Image (cartoon, rainbow, N blue to C red; front, side, top):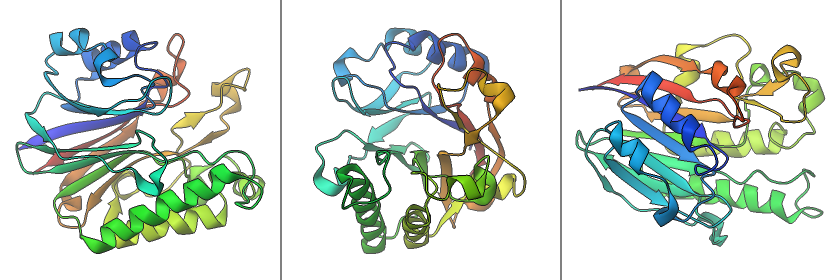
Amino acid sequence: MSFTLATWNINSVRLREALVVKLLGEEAPDVLCLQECKSPVDKIPLEGFRALGYEHIVARGQKGYNGVAILSKIPMVDAGGEDYAALGHARHVAAKLANGVLIHNFYVPAGGDEPDREKNEKFGQKLDYLTQMRDAFHAEAPQKAILVGDLNIAPREDDVWDHKKLLKIVSHTPVEVEHLAQVQEAGNWVDVTRQDIPTGKLYSWWSYRAKDWDAADKGRRLDHIWATGDISSAAHASRVLRAARGWEKPSDHAPVFASFDL
């Protein structure tokens, strides 16, 4: 079975419903994982998605904040959602596809502005969240699984526009990168995007603050697609749909894609 999966921090699924419909209509991934939906589950606008063939959904919602959802053309069942670090946030949902593949969709906390857990509670929450992700994958090794989402960390030097300038900026600090590496190691996860695109600058997020985000190109790769080692070789065709960042009233994130032949 072959399928294409995309992950996208939509920054309000209700506000940007038209952009989701545009993506589904033009790119037609079999599975779309959304983060930062900012909506209770019963308020997610499903009618337009279902009209395009996305009849299956699992989600965890929250009014005005967070929220994750998986839309699929492929039948799937809800496989739960964890509240890591006990934040009371809708940041994780999992689903098992009809082909047996388990998909984890994460929205890791951003971590605030100050990379010091003593001065910034949000940064501590981010590190704790990652630690509990690591421990969960240590406790039960995932198999035939894909992990996607806005992980809010750009781990490699070529995942940011300027490595040295961002070393003390939340999302690229050494402590965050190390925590993410521990999560990856614990689950035997393979970074599918970098497996396919091993070298070169690659971003999925550009700040709203830039007057011309495209020309400035001060991006970061915060959005990821991983697969467990037993299926990572089946992944291919990874790409970032950079053009979506330039759509009308866009999210500050661009969708990331990968295909799997399983």
